[in-house]
Length: 215
Ligand SMILES: N[C@@H](CCC(=O)N[C@@H](CS)C(=O)NCC(=O)O)C(=O)O
View 1 (cartoon, helix red, strand yellow):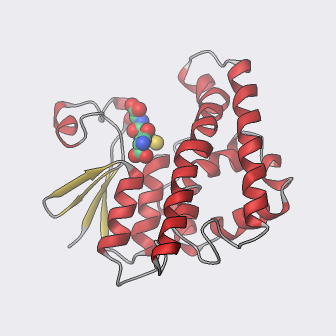
View 2 (cartoon, helix red, strand yellow):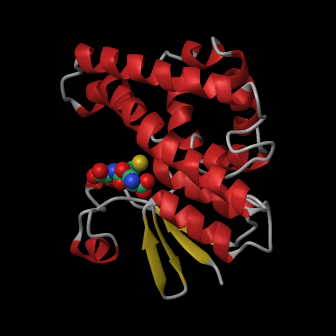
């Protein structure tokens, strides 16, 4: 069964594409142009009522929310490709813990930073220096905790690459490459080595080769 993935040009769907590649799942992409409002058409809202991408269709099964999609793919296709959820229940617990950390602690300040530094000038809304500063301070503190964790294990959940690491790539890419703040990563020896490791994985390189970032 070929899995359909909607909107792979944009950041969040790229994590799903990476997961599909790691799990050696055949997929096809369905372009969605956000600048033309293709995510708000009545047809699209039938599969994603919040008007966001990614969405996947696996046969007649439809799923949205990138982290939920990746958990589903990693579980359903457990017996093929890279094991992304850990081999034991304890490893799984740590993968889930760090997935939550990414969603609750890492992503929110980074998302604000990216919006105000990168997208505000392009989309024509005002960039707020206070939001930028506050987001950066929050992110610094999160990265200090990552530095401590990564001084003890090669990856976030242990000495194995997992969904927890993967889920940092779509927006981490913006941080390192497009916000002028690569130093936040480079000033932390273990975070820097971890970033180099996960971002040079062939699966992520393939994602970047297949689907350029929109900005
Ligand atoms: N929590 C969602 C966030 C999805 C999301 O915000 N996607 C962006 C593209 S990266 C989007 O669809 N933006 C269009 C909009 O908000 O109108 C997920 O992880 O799937």
